[in-house]
Length: 145
Image 1 (cartoon, one colour):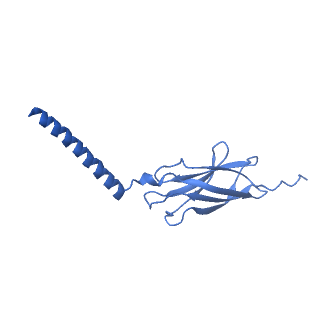
Image 2 (cartoon, rainbow, N blue to C red; image 1 turned 90 degrees about the horizontal axis):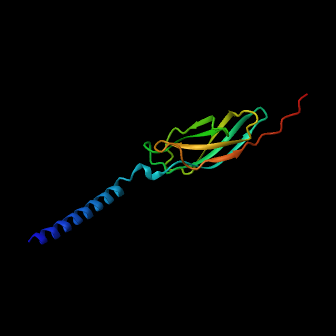
Image 3 (cartoon, rainbow, N blue to C red; image 1 turned 30 degrees about the vertical axis):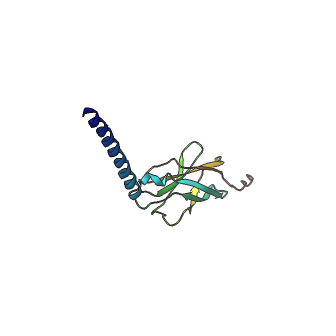
């Protein structure tokens, strides 16, 4: 009699565990975690600069925006030493527009800076997605008089 109880207890626990796993799986399908969208990736970036060190940036970001609770919410231009030179705030989710491209004009980049790093940020993970380092397309400086 004792052996039967042990066997049925084991079977009962195993059955309960199977049911629990099934319920968790069904809930995960019904309510996917916000983390499923992953981090925001910079997939393309370019810069055009004037001789007076003002640069115009064109940046394409990919992120599986899910709505206001999880979306790409900005991208930044950084100097080689990590100083933030400019930020482009993204004011709304881009659920139906992926990837999406935005511009940022008239960013003053210090003379001597030849490359910048572009990184994106999302409202849940912060930073961590793919970044791009790009050269600055600056016209040659006119000779000094």
